[in-house]
Length: 293
Image 1 (cartoon, rainbow, N blue to C red):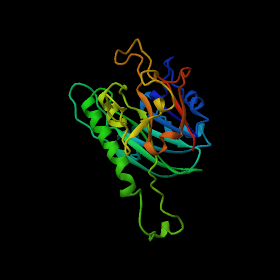
Image 2: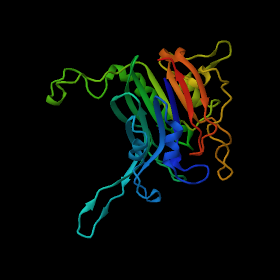
Image 3: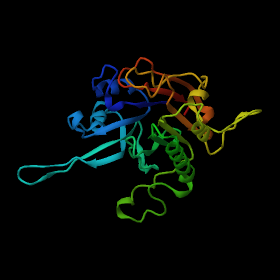
Image 4: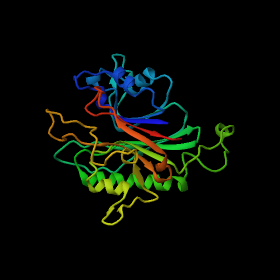
């Protein structure tokens, strides 16, 4: 199984042009795709519904979309009728196999004065695979505020750990008429977390996800935590660049900000991980990894 995560920056490429077809060609072929910074109905994109456009460009995939920012973009026509439209920014999961259920989890947010700060989410998809159900989470964490980012990571860990006991979108007997012919979607323990985390491996928030470093035993991974697929795939933790230096933006300099994390019970099945350094469709590079599932 091949998995890719990609912050597409609304499809704004290194040449500063917007090109969703370029994004689709970059990620097609993966079994599971996680995308961040996917927009709906913004004027600067000519009111394009990017999730729908991407779905049309990748017709062999099932897909779900979870918006973080969601504000009114409606208009009123001359006859008084309303064209209801939401302006959204969020994350997307695409899968070659059915996405049996989905939820959109709101993450903690702190109101700020000095910089723009958007609502962040983790979209969850329960994906059907030949080896059984698999949980996929796609997220995009706060870019500037490490205290908020820490809160968001703690919230994600709680969501992931509690999911098997709290259940999914429905549980118990199927008593509703519309459920009578379909079993409840499962809530597996196996989970994958994809996204742009806006942190580097030397930061304390990384330890929250993957375990702290012990001077004798090295990194102590928790059973209910995650393992970095990049490292598990045989790469040095300090290597890899998913956000190359941008001369017009002083925030990041050749950073590894994009990750695929896998739950400990499938960590041994990671076979390889690599970065697509040739992709031109965004200010980020896609991260791929392969699971023996």
